[in-house]
Length: 353
Image (cartoon, rainbow, N blue to C red; front, top):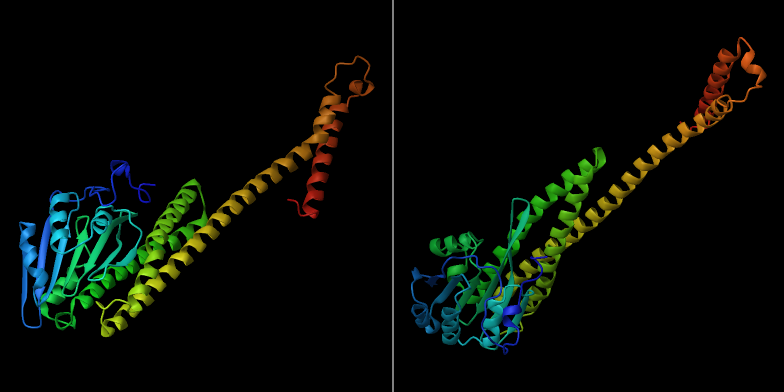
């Protein structure tokens, strides 16, 4: 449940817009990097003070400010004040269990979504918030080790593709696209586990199989919760209702929308497969139990008349004539054997054995 809910008790009773970090601290210290570029040049640096970012707001070039670590509230408050971010937006950035959404604040767009990774059979999640302005993009990350933005940094440095020749909206698209594409890698790993689980379910299911089914169902539930709202976010950006997104970028956003739909369809397929596997597992266990009960019932049925005869001749009555016969004991064994064999032959003809 820790993936689904974060403790918000620290914010209880506070007014709207109160800046309190909600979530796990994933970085020892805040790290702010700046990439300022145009078609001819790239300037990249790590700033020590948040005030160094302020001049880039009015720069004619495109600026990407990446913030890693959200637990230090004061620098974020200064950065938000300099770039005109609403206190409620800053509050959402600091609350790391937000539902994916997009908000049009007029002179900037606020986008929030999940960056996911799959390590040691567990989905590692991180909230990413994007602020898209006319000439800048500010990305806020919780600060876990590694992200999916390194290829974009390399493209900016090398000048490959359209990113250096386009505006801030194309940079925001590239960040969204890299996050959505990373979902496919997670689905590939989960798909391999689902296939292996399916083979195990057919060969020899056990209690550990049931545990694995439930684990994967929880992972799929979290993926669905994280990605289903993203469809609406990308659709809103695709419609081009904001003046911050140019028409030329809308074509690329449509491609991200298609990828999002593919991811969601894959998740729904895996969820259906796992639900079917759970039904198959329960049916398999039930059939196995029925087979055991069938064998035990047949054995009990065979021994029922034998037990009756053994009980009759186990009585201690004084006058039982057949007890004095010389062949009484072997005859009793012969009768018992004939009854048992006859019942076994009958059961086999009925295909009960």
